[in-house]
Image 1 (cartoon, rainbow, N blue to C red):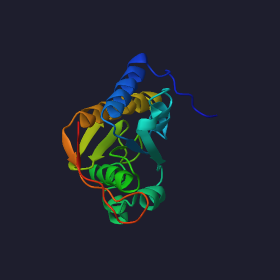
Image 2 (cartoon, helix red, strand yellow; image 1 turned 120 degrees about the horizontal axis):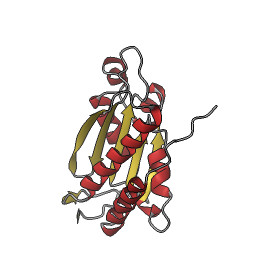
Image 3 (cartoon, rainbow, N blue to C red; image 1 turned 60 degrees about the vertical axis):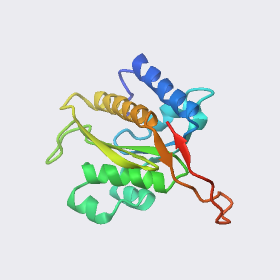
Image 4 (cartoon, helix red, strand yellow; image 1 turned 45 degrees about the horizontal axis):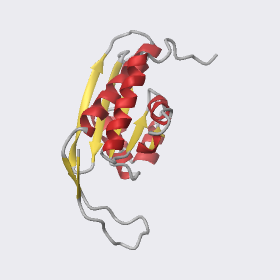
Length: 191
């Protein structure tokens, strides 16, 4: 039987998502997500708010090693040496989401919701990549608090990370025109 997200999304997570989308819209920036243990919940949340969801560019749900490699370009040697739940994997996921999208910033989430051999329950890695800025990483050690609770805590942490990154003052690099003719738009300041 499929697990229901219980408890339902708390109002503070909805409010935080609204603040993230407001900040993105105010700065005319778009976001992408690369999710593993949250299975697309963050992307769903960011597209649920009417009138603001245009700030969400795309989402990648990459639960398996193959998906992380094929969709985001996470190098196989990182997956083999460090594993999917690691700082290097989270950083590669965020960088890959940015590289495989037209978004201005991306966030990644990869973690263990349940425990197992060499898999500490509640260990979650996050990374955020932003054009014109270094990729940043965070790690949460939530412990064995339950699958739904880990996912909710991961949503909140990812939203907080996005909000912080949206508030940074960054000079965005030129981008190749969508028409593919090689022309470039000028750099612009955001934040």
